[in-house]
Length: 416
Ligand code: DSN
Image (cartoon, rainbow, N blue to C red; front, top):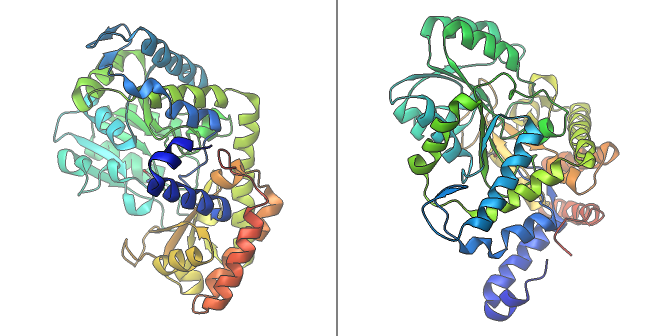
């Protein structure tokens, strides 16, 4: 992308964008929730569609002049329905947390019981953390992974559900590397008389790319962000069975949001169009192959991978247990070498969230740049050497040069 007008009119911001371009180009991106969008998605986000106000839904707006915007929003909805086989789609949620807030509002009353995956074991803030709206407004009953396998304990979950009789069971995660048993969740929810809500933010692209099973056929409501493995603009959407359509739409607008971001919804349409193409299936398959390769390469170097591996795009590494480096220190050290990743709690972590035992790694971004399984050996090697050089600034600087050389072999879409 070129930014001639920003360059001319706002040199200070131009310089900031250029520095971030350089960081993205020269570094190894292992943040599991990040990706690089296509130039077409970038163009839609930068389009004049941002100029419009369109509160309401296609055909029922509170502002004039929305005939064209209606077509853009309908295009995003049609493509999302085709991609996921959803009965109803609302593409207006601004991001993951507002989408989840709308789902709660559509299905629950304040105080109702929700069964959600504990944040410190892999869940998400909006799945019931006490400091989040979800934990403040609803009565959250957490479920956990099994201590030995580090996989969600479905038998325990069933016991909790039958005992607590929640109104909603939420399946989803932001730091869990194993497949979710959607069908079993639905069976348990039916026995407990609960609604089913899946948050597939992390894995939507892998589902759209036909690599992971989808909860859409089983679940009442499914939310997702659009910018992670799905590789669209920052934003979200909600899919649901037709019988929840009106409640979901009302909860998004006017319940939670005002005017939708029409340029972003158009970019969602572009990204869904891209995900409908056959090469997105190849991309999704490669993301998972790369994650498995990276996980094995790290295991070979003595790192403990939580649950023993990965079924998706991410993995949790117990760096403290394996190498006596805390997650916080690991994040900082590898950043000095040009590698970007996130510290993370691991299940039953004896340490605290701001300085946990683990790190979370993911392969969606590197895979978009064209990296393959064979490249994961090099990534693991660079990561390991950076972690082992934690007190040696000169070695870290030299590894950063290698990281740069490696990264420049893989172009970033949208960056020349
Ligand atoms: N912040 C996202 C992640 O990194 O998993 C979840 O919202």
